[in-house]
Image (cartoon, rainbow over all chains, first blue to last red):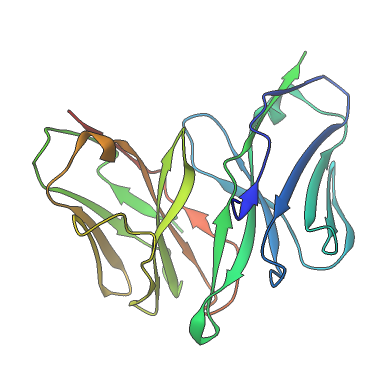
Length: 114
Length: 115
């Protein structure tokens, strides 16, 4: 089982709709969760982080975390063509010595159709 | 701040040649990460430095890969000898906090093609 799993997509939604991106992870000890956006040919950039169960909203973006189900999601309201990108879910995993590393999923490609 | 700087941006080489990728992290950041991204395997962590010390190199594919961080402002990833399966985009990223998850800032990447 992969440490972080995402549906590769593409996920196609019409402009103005809600896009829902999902991610599951395997390490129950994970405490920090991130969503990165990566435009084609560009580098990933952080758009959301979440550390507690529940919802966290930032503008049109809402991250949802359910640690019991080991599930993280990202909702994008009023989707715009400029949201078309690959969205990477990232989860921290503990290392020895108190360090942590972040493991990325393979990403979900989102296409917003005008 | 200029962000994370990587060089070269593109590298085309022949199988068997040595390849050296370079990275300058954001000033003041304590952690540096090297990633490899391919369509098949996504974004894979190769090695993680904290305060210039390698913390986790379990992602380094094999002995052909080596990484160094001689000081807080410079790191290299070397592949010797290179093979066609090493073709990928290699990203360097840095973060401020040591020993804790934090926002990672990615460089523009180096697109490596091994013929």
